[in-house]
Image 1 (cartoon, rainbow, N blue to C red):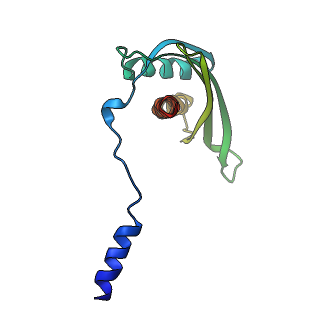
Image 2 (spheres, one colour):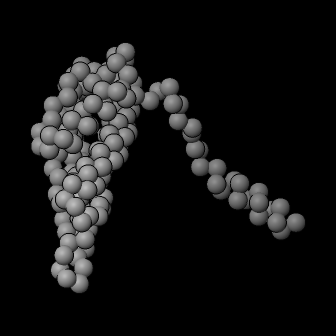
Length: 154
């Protein structure tokens, strides 16, 4: 009997009003213009992925300005004081302008990752390029999510 009462009370208390997000309402915007400043390789990846993901048939037109900064930090050294790992931190300052209403939204997003230093310089460069590609793709997903949040709040 106590378990039944406890279960009923638990169900009543946890009824928080959760609403399932309608996925058809996602990406209801059209990026009319993308301007970038900063790291060219990262901005190229972000710009191309934004163009792929966003549906261009929607009516809400926005302009996006992205300022990208990359920082490479020594993460780890061995006993011989040789660098064994680097950390890359990518910071993005994004400004979204809703063209029809001339409203501006600003937000910052950053991603970080670690890559290993190899015995050959070319392998180390490839490790860095692969990490930058992965981090840039994560940034694109976060940018799309944040734009959706900002546009849906109004």
